[in-house]
Image (cartoon, rainbow, N blue to C red; front, side, top):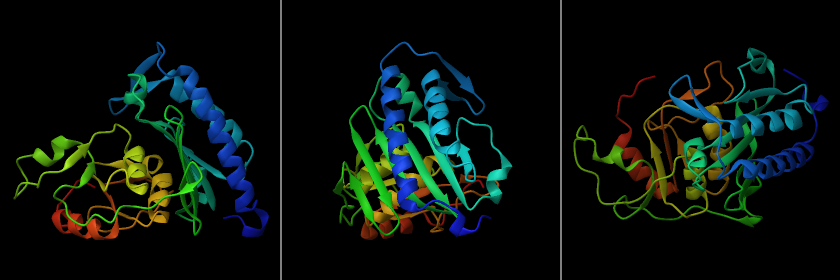
Length: 270
């Protein structure tokens, strides 16, 4: 680990991050709603030329400028050297690639700076809708510079749930879920951002997610007053050897408790 006094200040890192993400967002828009080159990668997920171009720009602006920091990105081969770094950039150049490739504005660029396993600053940027979510630890969360907070909705019934609707209709549930207003978004980070700003009341996922899906959104949600854990109540720790997590609950404090009671006892694959 590097000694803290050898590292840039958080203010310097924030300026670097914000400027890089805005530049990368502008680049993403040059590909948006065009005929993209795209292909499938391991795990049956789609990647496009835009993902690679945005990743390369962010890596050049962030990793090259901070050579002592680690780098973890969906579109870069993992380098175990990150495990020895105190600070690590955690990046998804385009979270919601399927939506992006279809020309739908349901995606974000996701960048977090993780320090000793916890995000200390993060940005989610949807350049198609000009939504710029940002948070710093202890500084609150903002959308386009205006402070945001989670909703105070307490009941599952009637809540605005950012999730895949088919999950709630699965026959294995011991009792049916109450009626909810389901908000379908391909990007899990964007779903969590919608909870952070009160546009949704909760997000729930019971399938595996990666550090780059969650790190920036995690901090933004918690700084907006929300709670964010795995389905069984465990906090997220980032920059581990396997940067993968089984599930998530994201909600305001009262609705979180109702959702936790529903799903905490589920047994999910590791």
